[in-house]
Image (spheres, one colour):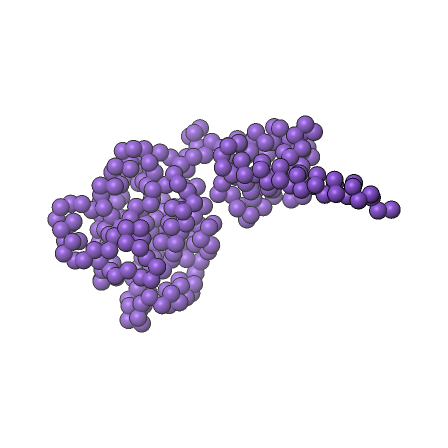
Amino acid sequence: MKPPEVDRIAGSRAAVAARRARAEVKRQVASGERTASEVLDLADADHPAEATLRVSELIGSIPWLGPTRTARIMTELGISPSKRVGGLGIHQKKRLREFLIERQKRKIEPGSLVVLAGPTAVGKGTVSSYIRDHHQDVLLSVSATTRPPRPGEIDGVTYYFVDDAEFDRMVAADEFLEWATVHNAYRYGTPRGPILQALSQGKSVLLEIDIQGARQVRQVFPEARLVFLLPPSWDELVRRLTGRGTEDSDEQDRRLKTAKAELEAQNEFDHRVVNSDVETAAREVVDLMATSSSD
């Protein structure tokens, strides 16, 4: 027998309200209004939104934990993808709480200087831009360059585009933290003032620069954390460089030769991250910028 129409409508409305309530719980966790461990502790009959939320949805709501890492965490915790928070066993709940509390201790280390470098066309700019757009705790340094802007690049946001005379003036005035000539063509440099000001205010700063610049920063700031961004493979690096169409064939050949030499420098860096996927690589870099309050 079909349920009466009034019961069907009421049931549908209740289901919609339940979904909205769970969505609100996830939003609160994602925004930092509530911690995931608080949701876990409230998951009982008196709190149906928390109790009926899937564990995978709870973990996936934590900033910077996407589907791939969530699935791996679920496997490590020994929790089924279909398990709801309110249906966890004693030992599962204990493991999940320990994970959540440890994760909540992690934060961007105030006043840290992190350098992201790697070979040409590896995607340094794309990864750093993703971090800038999705993690407001990190200040992305804007470099100056003498090369012309590429399509879509914005002066003062992507780079400060300056001519040779202005770059010479900045070098003479010691306005750069580091600078170098890249690919035997254009010069790039990191303005010193904004970096020092941000660090003095306790902000974390990410520098996206070339290998030469990373070496100079290490000399000036030995405490800086150096991260080397790697391509998934050499063939993929070649594909990315030739596919973007921003250089002629001679420039591509020059950059590929430089890239081979740059890859040999990876052992000079503190950490290595493979850029197979921009979002995943960005998360790994942000994790490397984090510290646990128990450290």
